Amino acid sequence: MTVYLVGAGPGDPGLLTRRAAELLAHADVVVYDRLAADELLALAPPDARRCSVGKAPGAVEASQGEINALLVEHGAAGRTVVRLKGGDPFVFGRGGEEAEALAAAGVPFEVVPGITSAIAAAAYAGIPVTHRGLATHVTIVTGHEDPAKGHADVDWEQLARAGGTLVILMGAARVAIIAARLQAGGLPPDTPVAAVQRGTRPDQRTVRATLATIGAQPIAAPAAIVVGAVAGLDLAWFEHRPLFGVSVVVTRAREQASGLRGQLETLGATVLELPTIVVEARPVELPRLDDVAWIVLTSVNGVAAFFDQGLAPRGLDARALAGCRVAAIGPGTAAALAERGVRADLIPERFVAEALVEAFPPAASGERVLLARAEQARDVLVDGLRTRGYTVDVLTLYRTVPAAPDPDAVTRVRAGAVDAITFTSSSTVTNFCDLVGPLAHQPLVVSIGPVTSATARDRGLRVDAEATEHTIDGLVAALRDTLAAGRPPGGATPRPPS
Image 1: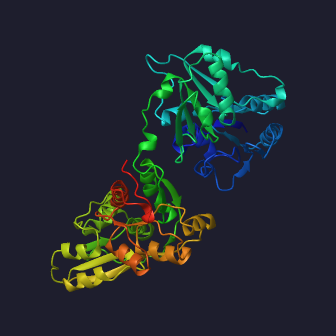
Image 2: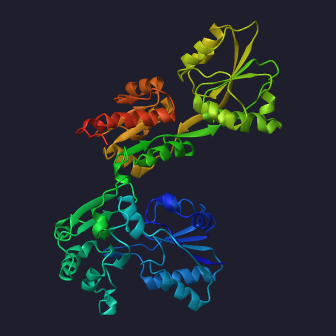
Image 3: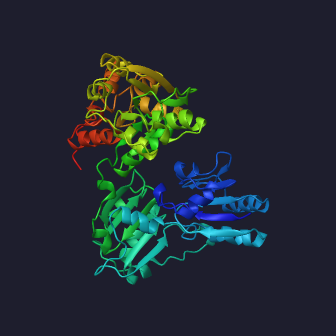
């Protein structure tokens, strides 16, 4: 087998290369640094061994010699090893030392480059490291040399005379000294400086100063420090996204959360997943469909269960519905049907059960409706359709049960350390309240629709915003619009529009 020295990128999981993701998916062992995102570790198989060897200022979990020995041990044992390193393994990542140790031991290895924070952090701060008329070259240098060498290789005064852009990594603790030496080398005190802290991450912070003032600024590691004329450019985009700096709790079932999470993160939010429900399949006895006039589906979960637990075990697919008309409660359900090759014949203008009943045509004599739904659903559709003359058969496809709590997430929410909570169904509200209990400080609460809002109010929550369109897109829009209008999370100081 092989040891793969893999660049994890600067922090944003979306910047991981496809090759790196493929290797993680087949790893037996993952040896990772402290800055590796949890989302990246989750790409490895559940039974893969995960070894943390992180280094932080003043704290080291494993020495470089111990890391080298660990890689040799697992590689020599025939395991597929991914050494996951922040940024690029050969840009101040000590990947060369690890490669030397593997080569000396006769263990095959491969290097998978990653995106270095020297370029990415600056780009996420809106700073091009080269720019026509300002900088034709860039120099990347470490601000923290190995003290065991007994001498310093970095000649800051000479670098000051080299011109172009200077990017300093691992220099947060010595920024005042470095700035003074660069000025001593001839750089003007008003030379622009930008320190990008935790670049590409949701909590990125950019400090803009000059060589004369940067030493007085609180700069926390990890930081990429950009020195030169380009640091005076402000083409910021990452920190200007509408939900940047807002922490949002997603309470959907974990298998459904990715779509909502992706939208929120694209807008800049930090997402805390606190799944309050788990979807459990129920045994399905699918009735004959030849005398069914309408099939009604009320959720994406229902569509999946209907096809996978109802039709598929009987060797059937979308063709079995050829003689039926199909109603969907909203566009999300309709989209799930379309993925299965079925076009919904009826979608109400408002995506609630009451509106679906109103949209149904009067029943012809003896027309039957098969209502495929969750176990805990309201009886609005059953009663309403029967009132309109239909014979209604209920097919229970699944049920939702409370999820096992994540203690760390629960503690954060209880303490009020989040800005907003999203609810996508009444069951998410009920289970959230049972799981979390009283809140020290209620953040902004955003609901997907009136039924969910009513449940939230019944449980003592203040509903700050409700989606006009009762979909995930509508939920995200409601959160965004509420914050853009200056409505503060949880009653705090108003937040200026982005």
